[in-house]
Image (cartoon, rainbow, N blue to C red; front, side):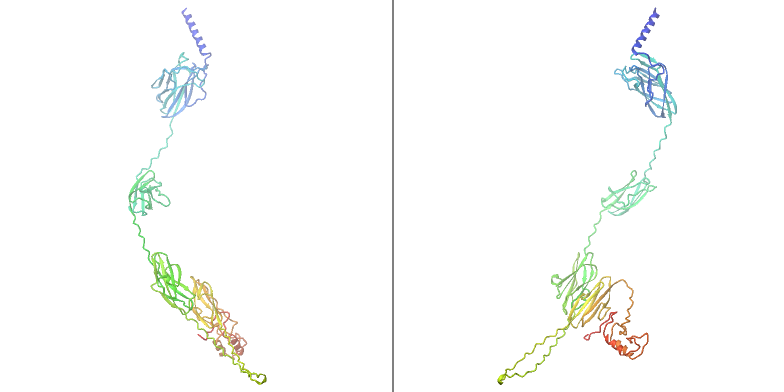
Amino acid sequence: MVRALARTALLVALIEAIAFFGFPFASPGTDVANAAEPFPPRFFLAQDYCHENHSTTFTAYVGEQKTIHVYLDCLPTGEALHWCSFTLQYDPTAIEMLGFTSLCTHDTNPGPEVNITDGQISVVGGDCGCYECPCGSGYCLGELHLRALNLGSSTIQPTNVSIELCWHQYSGTVWWYTYTINAIMPPTPTPTPTPTPCNPQINISPTQGPRLTMVTISGSGFRPYQEMSLSIGGVSFPFHGGAPMTDASGSFNRSSGIPSDAPTDTQTVFASDGVCTATCTFTVETPTPTPTPTPTPPIITNDGGASYITRTSARLNGDLTESGESSTTVYCYWGDNDGGTTPGNWDHEENLGIRGEGACYADVSSLTCYTTYYYRYKAVNAGGTVWANSSASFTTSICPTPTPTPTPTPTPVPEQPAPQPPGGAPAAPVITPTPTPTPTPTPNCCLTINVSGCGNTTPSAAKYCYTCPWDSQLTANPCPGWLFQQWIGAVSAPFSLTTWVGVSRNQTVTAVFATATPTPTPTPIICEKQRWDINEDCKVNDIDLFLLGKHYQETTQSPYPRWDINEDGSVEIKDLSLLGANWYKCVECCPCLEPTPWYK
């Protein structure tokens, strides 16, 4: 009877369980956990009773800590399980168990009790209650913390899992995962390079001086191949071409001027490569101001007086002996009275501009012949105004003597007998007035002065006409870098800068200038066709007549001598006629001098 009642009670309990949980349970071997293992690894504590193992493997470095999430799986009905405790077994020589952190606590149960002994961790008192959860994902109970101790593989497996099926407790070993840890050696860490030890030192030489003093800064004990930062009193040194670099031994040596804005007195010189730093001192002296020099006044003279004096022009010479340290402007004052050192007392002022030391001159014209003139030089610069010690004077050439005009002699008119009036009475005498003679105009002779090349003349190039005859002094003035070559025309000295010309008829004189660069000597012109110039001196005169007379009535033969002017084999009257026809003429192919006038 008792056994019958027991079987009945068991059957009733089984029916109530089936009615409560549904039927059938998950079949043996069914893995209701996710097929793909997420990270971090999980323990799945399931509700089937087939004791089937499901293993997984993960890798950890020796000494690396791992965290494993422990999950409670769902029932097929969607109702969550209620767990009470579980125990995990492990190899304590391979795994160090660090603890368990509960992630599922109940309002009345703050958390389970965790006990760790050699090779076992027990978690007791877990209580989450029965909650709805989506099947297939499980419910996370907490985190298991462990560390791999040495190389090799080690397995963790659960035992003694106690769960409740919504307050219907079931104790025993349920479906579980076996976890295997493969411990491997961690990678060899890259060694951190040991920094080069700093032992920096710097030196500056000299150790004192004013700003902009050139100094040499040297250093050692810094890091190799580093760009240096150098400053004094907080002001960087002005290095041209970039900052100095240390060499392989950590040394450097560079020169620079002390910065112009460096503070005075003793200052710290700072050197750094970004890690290593060293200092020394330098005394910046207060610079002594350079005194401003007092300007020196110039010195000027009249340089011996005037030159190239003619009736109407002259050159007023001067000499700037010293110009001082500043620009000097030179003036020449002149006139027919001595104005002293008062500019307003002079008739004329010539501004020669800024001049350097040496000779200077002013060419003046439109002067009056045979008149005394005065001149005086003045120089002005920052040092002051200085005049020549005294005025210089000169007298222009004498005026030309006018040729007197002869008074014409009146022609007498013969007296005519008075006509007799009719009747025999005598008529009154007729008086014929003497006519006033018309004066003969005095002819003028003109001289035309020309210039060839760079230069001028005194008097200047122009046409001058005066009563014949007259004469004039001529002066050639070449430009800088040019040379006077010769006068072309009837002058007294054709190769002299200063010469005279006699003007008895209209004529032309040309001053020829050439560059200072040496030029080849021109080939002389031989006047072959103008044979009446027997001695080839470019003029036909008494010398040619003498030579012809010496050989007069001689016979000649080819090549004919020059006194056989017509080259007919004899020196005779025909040659004399040719000579006379060209008497006192210049040869056309070369310059020559006209004969000296009779009045010279």
